[in-house]
Length: 104
Image (tube, rainbow, N blue to C red; front, side, top):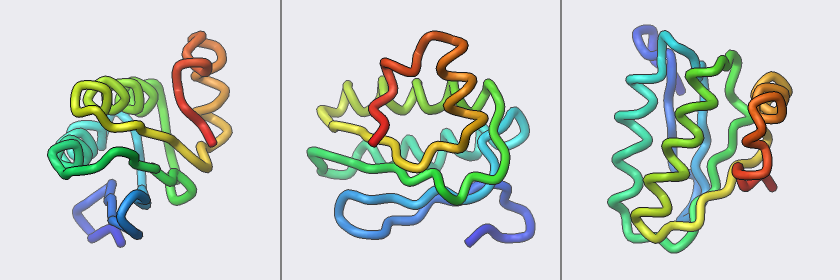
């Protein structure tokens, strides 16, 4: 879970699934980027990021999801998102990137 100092945590649930908890916002996006980027060096064909634990998200969080897709593509990883918060889905739709995000 998140510590008192951390606004974002990511933990591995199984070989493909990762649980995201906390904020994906301007305040936490640098921390989230560092933690998430480390995952794309792991040997994997597919990754699923579960966003059910995201409590706050803004446009920086959406940009981060797109950056993770880019990193996944460069690493040969098929990245899927599940349980996106409504606010992220709405922003993705308005920005016209909802078709780019692989959402299960």
